[in-house]
Image (tube, rainbow, N blue to C red; front, top):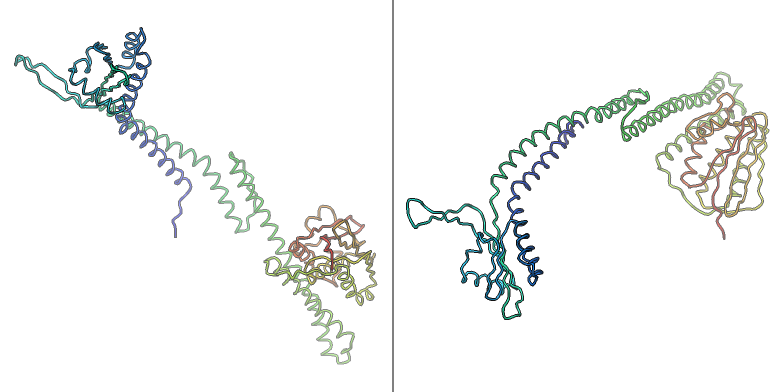
Amino acid sequence: MKKTTRLQWKVLRYLFTYVIGILFLLWFFQVILLQPFYEFNKINVVKEVADKIEKYIDSNQLEEYVSSLSDQNDLCVRIISENDISTRNAGCRISQLPVDKLLEYANLAIQNNGTYLSKSDLVEMQFVPDTLNTVTAKFNGDKNVIYTKVVNLESDSPTIIMVNTRISRVNAATQALSYQLLFIGIIVTLSAAILAFFMAKKIVKPIAEINEASQNLSKGDYKHMTSQKDYLEVQELNQTLTEAAQQVQKADKAKRDLIANVSHDLRTPLTMITGYGEMMMDLPNEKTDENIKVIVNESKRLSIIVNDLLDLSKLAENKITLNLEKFDITECCREVIKTYDQHLKQERIVIEFDTTEDVNIVGDKHRISQVLHNLINNAINYSDENKRIIIHQRIEGEKVKILVQDFGCGIAESDLPLIWDRYYKVDKEHIRSNQGSGIGLAIVREILDLHHYTYGVESKVNEGSIFYFETTIEKGE
C-alpha cells in the first residue's frame, strides 16, 4: 500500500526540490560552463571583427576603423596587402610572427575556403636576470587565438586579415561565483522554508479544516462549512462539500421517511389480512365472499407496494433494460383506462380520454403502461370530492403529448421540484390510502429518463394538477 504524505510536507518537499534544481542550474551554467561560454563568445567576436574589416578593406579610413575595433574588443589586427604589412596594436602576438608563419596561416586559410582559426596554449617568454642573454618559457594557462581570413582570393595579390585575442582562464571568477552561490543557496533555502510555512498556514490549513468537517458527514454531522476562505479553489471546494452535506442530509431524511411510510403502508394491509383471517378462523359464519375479497384486495395491495419498491431499486441501479418497439400509444392509453373499470364503478370516479387520432411512438410498451398506471393512480389519490380525471392526447407537429389531469387539491409551487423524489408526499393528510405505493412518481421519473422523454407537471393549489410526458411520433406502418 502506497504511503500517504500530508499536504504541507509535500509542499515543503516540492519547494526544496525546486530550490535545489534552480541552484544546480545556476552552478552548472555560471561555474562549469562559464569558461566554454566565454571562449565561444571571444571567438565569435574575432570572426565578426574580421568580417567588418573586410567591408572596409578599400576605405581610406581603414586604419582609423581598425584601431577603433581593436580598442573596443580588446584585440589586435594585422592586415597584409601586396608587399605592405600593416600592423595594428604592435605589441600583440601576431606582430611577432615571422614571414614563414604568416604564409603558413595564409595557406591554411586558402585551403579552408578563406578562413582559418588557430587556438594554442599561450607561453610567456620571461628574461632571467642571473643568466645573461637567456630567457625562460612559462605556461600561464591562457589560450592564444589567431583568426586568419584571406579576401580577394581570385586576384593575384590577395589581402590577408589576421585578428588576434587572448582567452584568459576564469578560475578566479568561478571560485568567486561558487562562494556567491553558496550564500545565495543559504538565503534561498531559508526563504523557501519560510514560504512553505506560510503556504501551510494559508492554504493547507483551510483545506485541512474542510477535510475534518467532511469526515464528520459519516457521523451524521451535517453542519454547513461556511467559514470565509481566501482562495477561489478552496471556496469552491467548501461550497461543493456544503452542497454535498445538504444532499446527504436530504437523502438521510428521505431514507427515514421512506422506511416510515413504507412501514405504514405495509402495516395497514397486513393488519387487515391478519384481522379478517383471525375473524374467519374464530367465527366460521364470517367466511363470506365479501371478507375473502377484502383479504385478496389487501394482498394485491401488498404485492403492488413490494413490486414498486423492487422496480424503483432496479431502475435506480440501471438494472432494467428497455424492450424498445413501435406501438400505438393511443390504444395503449385505452387499454390502461379499461383496467380501471371495476374500480371506477366502486369509487364512482370518471376517467375521460380526449384524443382525435391514433399515433405510434417508439418505447417499451410495458414500461409506458406502468407510467400511465402510476399517473392515473396518483390522480385518483388526490382527486378528493371532485372524482374526475381527464387523459389528453395532443399532437403538436411531430410530437405527441400525453397529459393526465385531475381536479384535486393541487400542489404548491415550492413543492413541484420535490414531487419526483422517492416517497415524497405533498400532503399526507389528503392522500387516499386505497391505491398505489407512494413511490409511483419516482418510478415515472426513472422510466421516462430511460426513454429520454420530456416530462413535467403543472399545478395550482385547489385547482388540480396536470402531469405530462412528450415524445416524437413514429411515421409509417
